[in-house]
Length: 290
Image (cartoon, rainbow, N blue to C red):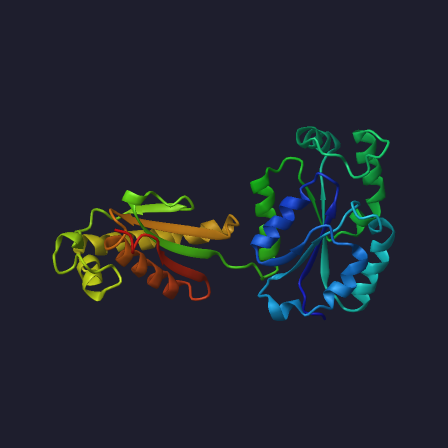
């Protein structure tokens, strides 16, 4: 059995294939949209796994590529004969839903040459009926919004056991310089005693042991850390289940130099111990600003 974990996304135009491949990319797949089916065997011979840490390969293939309809059956059969394990994910939607989506986007259907939209949709449905029958999984996206479809695709990746882990950034900042625009959760730690007002600590920053001791040994800070870390341990798996690829935890104090730096570092250290397999980074946005 070949080692690649492969998902081929196909189906009706306007059924959500772009959303599906974006969800798989967030899940750690190496993705190619509008892949010519004739190139697939050669592509699979490339040593991609040596250069990329990936969960698998995902390809969108459909009637946009002229050779797809006449070639896909033979090529898929040949790949299976070569012991490639892949799943065909077929996306569809009701005719009236597809018409509504095209009216909203004002895009042309790929089969719309000299045909109206309804006839094009019906022709595509007829041309893909054999592929639909051969599909491993069929999803009707008629009543799915973008977030629901993304969640469904993430669940497919999760069941394969190769879902990429969430990327967590703990970011310290100063409120005087503005809240980070990419923050998902913002925590204000200005309630902690401020080292800035102590002459011996003012020139230092939150990476120094003296400042860390002043901030983290504070009884109120210790109680805060206990409660906040419990909340994060509860929330992080929920964000992962929602299919979130990146999570930014922003910790702010007045200037972003003392308290937020010490607390952000402690949070990052704790999460690194709690989740040794996850990618966790700590950044201090305003530590050098005056």
